[in-house]
Image 1 (spheres, protein in one colour):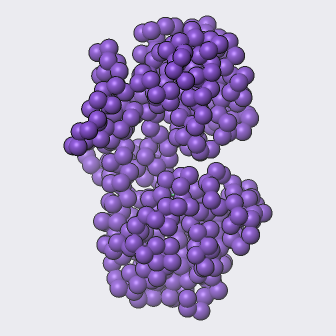
Image 2 (tube, rainbow, N blue to C red):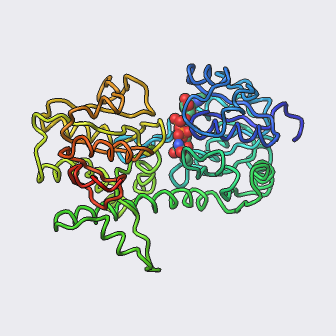
Image 3 (cartoon, rainbow, N blue to C red):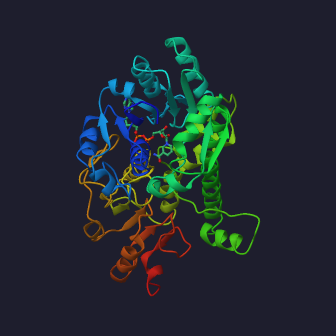
Length: 422
Ligand SMILES: NC(=O)c1ccc[n+]([C@@H]2O[C@H](COP(=O)([O-])OP(=O)(O)OC[C@H]3O[C@@H](n4cnc5c(N)ncnc54)[C@H](O)[C@@H]3O)[C@@H](O)[C@H]2O)c1
């Protein structure tokens, strides 16, 4: 590729940027990164993965992907990919500060012939904002000297290695040179490229996430209705889905995470009225309280020993960002239990939680000794085995199993319901 020293620079080498940089290296490109997080840079530069993302251990150990603090290296790279965070702030508004800081830092190092590819998830019109920003702050002409694309990331955490090579890549551009450069960049990962404009590409990404978010909210709402009426949602879902070709109801759960939990707001910030995305958010946010309140209809929490299994935002990850488990923990505490034991084998001990402070992370065998009730907050692999063996010793323990990890189609039950079923 051209006369630049590096093919790619990833700005923001977190959960999205790091796997992407490593996959480019595996595909034969030269890639570097920039990140402001010193500890993250040190871990990566020493050849270790800073978080759980299977498939990359051997690649990162080669130390071919090096991450820098300063932006001077931008002068030497052909393609600049922005993968910094885009959280929502408290006002249903995308917090664009990380992108704005990156633009400011790169601007003095931009060189004719480069592509800027935005890959963070953004509200519609953000790529247009970047085009205006470049026009306003640099002398470079977009589409002639500096190329611009929005190419969304659609992987799920934990499957980046496979999905970067198998998911179709959406390419949003609004001029021929940008389209050509973005195509040349991503075709090293996949031949399945879909071309469109900025807004459509931005909305495709949001539509993918919002569809899942609303879909999960529907199941959660059905779970509330079912429990109010004395029915169990898992039996309803099983019967409703069985050999019925016109819908597929997904299972309920605690739906959080840094993507799904915020992306509804990126469309919502453009809408002046309450919409169904906002309602989906409301239902998801109510679920921890639902679990506690509907548990209290069966038995009490006061003075009981409670275990919470799982603290991350989804199964088999070490990512706690925007998990609803900490919120569940707080609602349990409000009921004045004797003790609450958190156990999550994907997380270190102690668990450092910015809202709940430093928490002891109990090994699961110890967490379950003489426990009165167990809330399965995350469906990590292996919890079913643990609960089935507990049932043999302590059949009176109450279990709240929103994820149906024990496959008995009930959310609230006593461990005796598992006896003889394993
Ligand atoms: N995590 C996912 O599975 C996923 C999937 C698809 C899309 N996305 C989107 O990708 C984007 C990144 O998400 P993530 O999960 O990788 O976030 P992350 O927090 O793991 O990574 C972002 C990185 O950017 C760095 N950073 C922030 N501002 C910087 C700056 N000014 N200069 C240098 N480095 C800076 C941070 O230190 C951090 O390491 C978000 O928009 C997110 O919505 C995430």
